[in-house]
Amino acid sequence: MKVAVALFVSAASAASIPVKRLPLLEGLPLEQFGGVHSISIEDAINRLDLVGTNFTALPISSIFEAVTDVVSDVLDETLGKLAHAGSHKKPQEQETQGLQEEKVSTSTESDSDSAEDTEKTESTQSTTQSATPSTETAETTQSPSVSSNQTSQSLQGTNSAAATGECSNPNIRFEWDNYSASDKAAFVDAFQCLMKAPPSGKFAPSKSRFEDIVRLHQAYSPNIHSKSTTQQTHKFLLWHRYYVWALEQIMRDECGFDRAFPWWDEKKWAGRFAQATIFTPEYFGTLPAPVNGAATCVNDGKFAGLQLSLGPGMVTDNMHCLQRAVNEQVTAQTGQNAWDTCRSRTSYPDFHSCVEFTYHAQGHNGVGGVMADAIASPGDPSFFMHHLFVDYAFRKWQLDDVATRTTSISGCADNTNCSPLTLDTMVYVGEICGAKCPDLKVRDVLNTVNGHFCYRYDY
Ligand SMILES: [Cu+2]
Image (cartoon, rainbow, N blue to C red; front, top):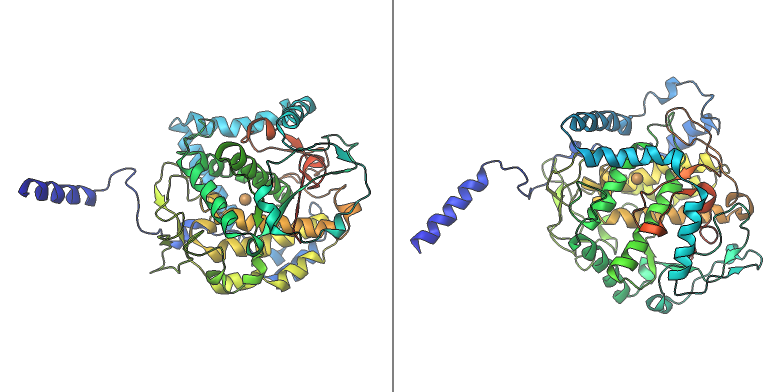
């Protein structure tokens, strides 16, 4: 026994010595997460309205000086770190970045076509394209009971500009509170499955298949988020739509997830996220407050004790716990008022800016900790519930003028020079779900029931 005690003491002493990759069981200081760039809804109204849709013509005006450009700072800092890390030989990291750059010039339509063929072959559902008139505005609630029987996503329609019809049998995403307990459990179990699965090797230095998905967002984040209200990319909504859909395919194909997908009606929990029915010990774990200026590790729920190696920011190989730090004053800004304000915007760039900088950002920052990191936030699985809500918002806004908003696009394709965003602008998710995730054009991801996707929401 004495030997055993001595060993124990020895181990405890060793634990007090900083060792690389030692799991960090305490939360990190809040400032390490930076914060997702946000402005108040009043600012959105007063400031973004002044910008209008012509972002390129607007000089950097003093009206924006009061806006804290957190994301820009974080990106500058972390990109600096990445460049620095690159000099330390991080070949995989550079490869991921290089992959994206390279694809700008090498991707072809035929890639997408061949992927589509593959998808059609694999699909368990009919993939004939419906020629019936649009019924999108009549999306209605259906019984959640069908959710348990839905099969894997079918890819319907075509990737060409000629696609006009809707897919015939879209998957339905059910609001969390309309989703059965069995479906909820299966959904969080699918995340666990990905966390236990080995990394593919294509998204190094991720440590699991789940972290592959985090790494994709981390590596691409400079290109898919606006830097500030004056340096925007309006790819954000489109890219995240594809990203969340890619998660769905991975869960289905690699973890046997065979249910409908959920979405989260976040606006009904504004100001009380900690009471939301996703943040419970059965599912995503509770939503703790910060302690002494640091986030708090999540110690209950299906992801209790989860250790992440990616983040904050662009940092890799940095083990830390899944952590949160709720701020209900911030979550209070994600409610109906913000929803209505953004939904009333008539141009895509205006709607996009409103969402990205208001309730999108405040949903991230309000959960806090990992979620308040603009770059590595997918490490908290609740990221996907938040972005399912953002995609729901995008879809609802599109349905308000479906003929226009599912067939046309405008705004900036990048957050430096504002090259025009067009239907032919490419959207990449690093082929993270294999042949189902080819490089696509905006036209392929603009509609959820036509093009590359075939899903809709329960209401
Ligand atoms: Cu993002």
